[in-house]
Each structure stands twice: as structure tokens, then as C-alpha cells.
Image (cartoon, rainbow, N blue to C red; front, side, top):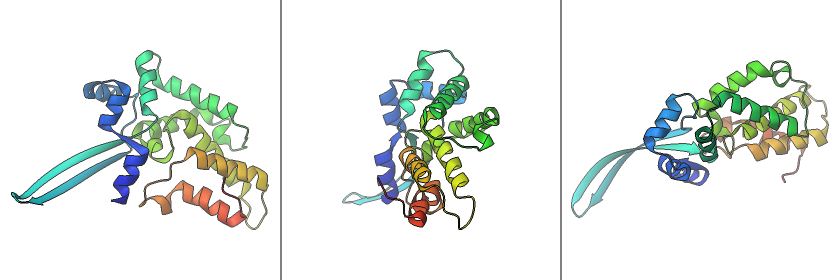
Length: 206
């Protein structure tokens, strides 16, 4: 199945996450319930029917998929007693400051404190594990900044935006975003702000 192939290529199963992180399933549950660890981005339920010489056999299975950056996040949680949100917010702010792009969107300016709380909620829900390559604060900050810039540069219909800045923002979003699962691509931010922008403004693909 195309969906399972996609998940296998771009995500970690729960077993793979535990092996990469060196923790137990019980410890992962504790970190999640404690409000510091994101939940899985995908949960797959499988109903299997096997037919062989011995007859038919039915079986059900459930698989959880996590972002590939989460072993490093678990490593941070295990190495310090610092509040997880404080770590997330600091890394997010540092990432924003390091990027060679700027936006006038107040969400990432005067409203950043409130925005970070919203971002933290999406992070813990596993949303950013689904739509960014690593699921980590650095990719989340890059994604949000890029989308703010793209909206800002293309806000006026039929106007020609600064193509150089627009290409920078689109390429940044491209690097930070996942390809998205096959059934999600047409509704994804990648489709709206990467594919559509390149097509509309004739931007080259790196």
C-alpha cells in the first residue's frame, strides 16, 4: 500500500522510536502523559486475513508512527529537568533569529509569546510530526516563518511579488516540510505554498 510505504520511509514506528531512544514503552507513556512528549502523528489499524494450506486466519494490528526527530527530543527530556515548553520555546526563538528571512506578521513578532503556546499544543498533539521533516522546533519555526512570508508577499492579487524573497521562502518551506501522505497532499500546506507558488510564479525547483 502506498500509504504504508510512505510511513515506513518517513516515520518511525513505536518500536523503532523506543529502540532509537533507549527507553521502555512505559517510560514513553510517562513522558507523553507528563506533557513533554508528542503523541504519534499517525495511528494505523490493520485488519488482516491470511489464507494458506491450513485455512483462514484473521488478525488485527495497530501501528503508531512518530517523526524521525523525536529520539533526539526524548534525549533532551531525559537529560534535563528543565520545563519542556521552555526548551521548545527557546529553540523556536533561536531558530527564528538564525533564519535570513523576516516577516511583518505580528504572530511572529509582538504576538510570539501567545503563538508559542499554540505551537506547543500542536507539537504535543503530533501535528508537526506529520507536516515537518523532523517534528522539532527548528523545522516548525522555519515552516511558520516561510508561510507567513509567502502570504505576505502574495497578498495582493495580480501583483508581482519580490521573486527572490518569494523563492527563499518557498525553498525554506520545501526543506522544512514533509512530502505528506498520498491522501493528504492535495489539502496540504506543501501543495498550497510550495507546489502552487512554484507553478504560479515560475519558481525553479532546487
